[in-house]
Every structure is written in structure tokens, then in C-alpha cells.
Image (cartoon, rainbow, N blue to C red; front, side, top):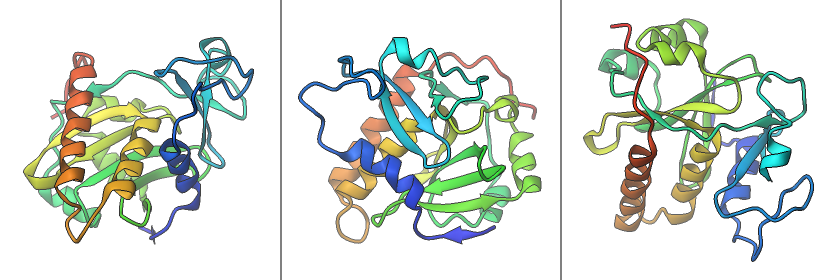
Length: 212
């Protein structure tokens, strides 16, 4: 695994989600106004996120060969997923909050975890990812660049979600912006609990069974 303490491309997405909101947000392709909850596109090369109206977003489906990829909006909680501690420890990720996604640029699975200084990245070797993917059928079909396995093992939690990649960068931005002291601070932990409670509330019923 290759550890890089700073992730400039990931920071581009993070900065996009932590900037103060505009009075009226607009589609970055056609400039049409968009509602507060709107669609996003991602540039896999730079990992830049763009706001998009529905009419523009639909032009960038996941199968097309385009610069941008349309980010899905569904959230799924993988209640049937259990990652054994031995496998988790073999990943050598220093904290229990991380997201995994398949990159079409690097041609590998990347694990990104937040920190007060910004997100850091670990490249996951193919054998290790195959061991993880074998634990749940949904992980083997995760689309590149736009969806991620979000893992929360902080403070004894064992939560696993398949989420849009922009939600992961929103969480990373939250950690970077609100971290205080050595442990993050009560305000950050409250925000994180609310974040995961919101994911759980939005999550679709799980339909894919665990392989185990």
C-alpha cells in the first residue's frame, strides 16, 4: 500500500463542498438555477465536483465516454457486511473512518480517510480488495469514480454504507473544518453522528445479501 498524507486532487473536491454557498446556486454547465439538493458531476482526473441541473446531469450517464461522470444519489446501508478485525487491521488505515472507491484514472481501489489537514490516500492492492469485495455482493459491482464504500468504525461503531462520492467529500470537509484539539472536539462528533444518522434515514432497503 502507498500512503500519501496529502491528496491535492481530493482537496479540490473537498474545497468545492466547504466553500460558503452562493445566494443562488447554478448549474456549472448551463448556469440554470438549481435547488439546494441538486445533482453533481465529477471529473475523475482532477476529482473536481460540479453542480448540475437535472437536464445537464442526465447527459453524463455512467456508461458514456465523457469528461465528467454523473454521481448517483442513492444511499444503501450494508447491514449484512461484516469486516473481520484481522482483515481491517491488514489495511493499516490509522483511523476508523474511511471511504473506498474504484478510480478509473489509477486503475486501482483507493482508500481515503479524513484528517485535520485534509484527506489522505492509501492504494489498496487487488488481492486485499478482492478479500473485502468477497464479503458482500454489492462491492464487486461498485461503479468507478462516483460511488464509494464508506466505513465508520469510530468509537465502537460498525457502519458500512454505499454512498455517492460527493457525500464522502462532504464528510471529509466537515472533519477538516470543525476539528479542534487532539480528539476532534464534541461539536465535530455531534456533527458526525448527525451525518451518519442522516445517511441511515435516507438509505434504501438492502437487497443484496452477504456472500458469507
